[in-house]
Length: 182
Image (cartoon, rainbow, N blue to C red):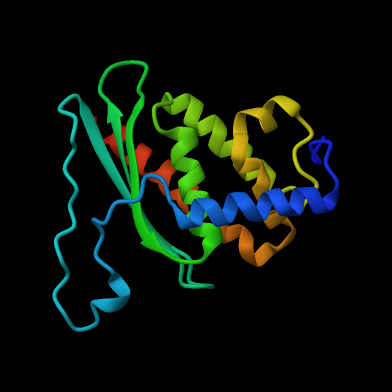
């Protein structure tokens, strides 16, 4: 496990393709957050995003990576009924292709899932990032992560791990805020 039956070169090519495609055409990206880096001296802009579903509670989280300047605001709408489901998951932000691609892949994986399923994916992705390039030793977890497994290559580089985790941390925090507001 961990190499998906592919050579290192094949994995690297798949990694590059998925990251470049997801960064080029990011899923779940909407422009709603103020660009804090450009506000210097000006009054902050009201960036509240309202819930688009009347049966959902919204939560929002702003994440910033001071190491490289990546930032993202993640907005989640969680259903009021049990089991709580992430009905809407969107983000706004800027940064390197790794952070942008990871946000895009995270939206594809977590939108529409129950909170428990999304948190399980969060834990699996964290485990992948902690693998230092070795990947997961559980084929079922790898399958659930779908395209996110290509970030195994990122886990070799400690300075890039924060880039890949930025959006995932925002998703977890925004969902927690939505649940706390219920």
